[in-house]
Image (cartoon, rainbow, N blue to C red; front, side, top):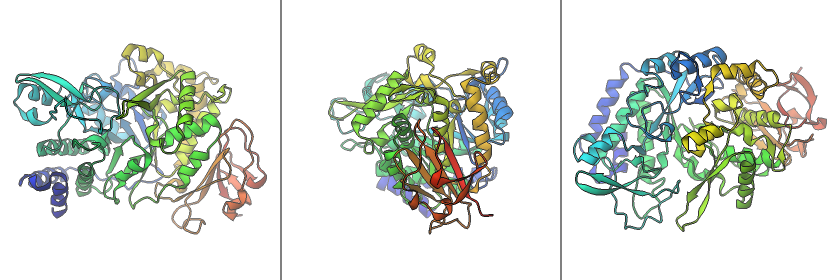
Amino acid sequence: MQKLEHLLQQIFGDSVPESLGHDIGLKIEAAKSTFPRYQSWSEQDLILISYGDSVLTEGLLPLSSLHRFLGDYLEGLISAVHILPFFPFSSDDGFSVIDYYQVNYSLGDWQDVAALNQDFELMFDLVMNHCSRQSLWFNDFVNGSGEGKDYFIESDPSLDYSEVTRPRTNPLIVDVYTRKGLKHVWATFSDDQIDLDFSNPKVLLAFIDIFIYYLNKGGRFIRLDAVAFVWKLLGTNCIHLPQTHAIVKLLRWVMQQLDPNLVLITETNVPHQENISYFGAGDEAHLVYQFALPPLLLHALNRGNGHYLTAWARDLAALPEGCSYFNFVASHDGIGVRAVEQIIPKHEISDLAESVHNFGGFVSMKSNGDGTQNPYELNISLFDALQGTRTGSDQWQVERFLCSQMVLLSLQGIPGIYIHSLTATANDHLLVEQTGRTRSINRHRWQRQEFEDLLAQGHSAQAQVFHRYRDLLALRKSIAAFNPQAAQRVYDCGDAVFVLQRGLAPNGGVSLSHEALLAVFNLTKYPQHLDHCAQLPQAYLGECEDLLSEERLNLVDYKLKPYQVLWLCPVTD
């Protein structure tokens, strides 16, 4: 308990209530007796990201429909499902939670979640920074009585908020009419998502209760949504504050008491060095969302130039023990560009945004303290974002897209695969019109019959991508070099290609604990030879087997086809 008391001191200073540590300890002890046990992560771990209603079947509730679809097509190929917020909500497609303990009745119930958990491990979202204006807690605040009456941050709108980091352009301080008159509260993301006051120990205790409840309901992976903003202190930028990091450490410690193989994931869409600060000293997040990867990879494939991708990947710092990356290249949100503000020049980000517009997408902006705005997020289906390059659309969409997915499957970490990548989903402009939100462009709801009709058409994009993707998942799970703990080295073999080795020993040879593999990606629509092959380990300069095509080749004189990928192992016989 000494560690717990130390963390609470870091969060609250000298104002820690005497009973807080005791109350947290009681919640942990109560959970231990019924808690499941998990295996440590491995190359078998592949996580699918999906809304509860991404695949609909007539006559079934959405969670049951999703379960049946995944069971029919992906059982044995993915290990876990991230069900995006499935709680009652009032806006933002689930991220404005009304009741943290209930399943949205339109999706199903906790029995449906438990049934899915029989076949797949699960990831849940802990939406900590804010809750819905329609929540009981906020109703308590409006009425001035009840549990939530002191759970929110009252602020004076006349004060100077220019230093506060803003992920949105909406007003930070919003008006609320209460029984005690007009009040003003903090709302980082929207006027329906009211920020919670974590300087109140009761708020922290309430979220530890929710956290343990989710773990007991089958959530092995817990994603801390927008956690970087949870602690506010006027006069600072109100992001990544020491108290925020201490709260993440506390949640990690709670997990450790229950099962060391539980996994805490931080979602912080910020520049790369700030993002990886949530590893701490190996005592904060187990996994950190790799936010720089999606824009870097899209930029590389859009330009046919992997200079920035290679430089960034080559310079990734060694991971703390027991930590890794949560890699993704598409998600329910758009493609955030904040993570690469210090990596890709501004004019090239603007060029990429122009391509997104040309391919039917949108660009969301954020406010800066000086009144200017910068691109924050590119809203587009990844499949449509890769329909061409900066010179326009072409015939290489499927190959370019699959190349992007194979980069995801090859990098060190655990892959998070958005369901609409598996299904090669196009931009959903109709849903944007219906919701009025640009993020809806990438949140299509498939009717299962509609999707299966497309699968039956061998020439459809869905058939071409889905069947090949399933084969890739099956192959990847059999390759020990893709264990999240297997080391990685990136080589600069020219801007037209991206080259990395997995499962290497410190001297560059084959690891004793993991097989070794060299992954080679042609980032262009033109045939390519590798430049600077001499820097590669000698074992790959002779005869190798490509695990993807099952062909033998010599890399030195091999010509890569447009967007071709090789997973190479040296031939030893």
